[in-house]
Length: 193
Image 1 (spheres, helix red, strand yellow):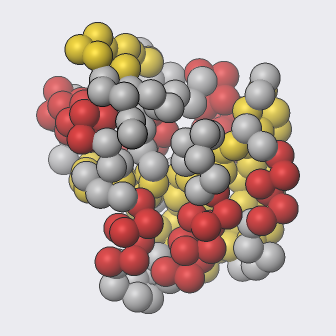
Image 2 (cartoon, helix red, strand yellow):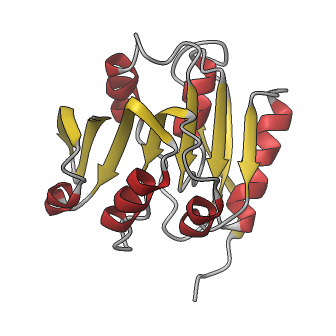
């Protein structure tokens, strides 16, 4: 059973783009850990030629930091999927506070949401996949995302995990483009083939 969130709000800043230096608020929910500034900076340096005008999916959104950074840097649309109602409420609040119409929030379990999507709707060119580290969701999420048909051919998938062995469970049709480690966080960028 998940512990209830406290009323305390945390924040993380957007690094660059339209909303540069603005702070995203997020709740104190067990297991919610936004992607660190230096990791986001590296990731978006990798993506600098791919983000403008892209349609993105922030699966297991948590704080929504990756999706908001993408919106700030010119993504055409970001769909946020977050099952925790308190975290989802904060994402909604940040979308409203920043007056962003290019973000859509789905308060849903990521696996249920993927299963409910219409097959073959290849609409995402970039997916952020950062499931909770204390759960073993990554392999299943990759398999279900790949099978869903939501990822466009040559689409990019960013993956973040604490367990480097998880990368061995990535679909064989995804090619690793970049990979790094920062502290206990392993992160990689893949391309669907």
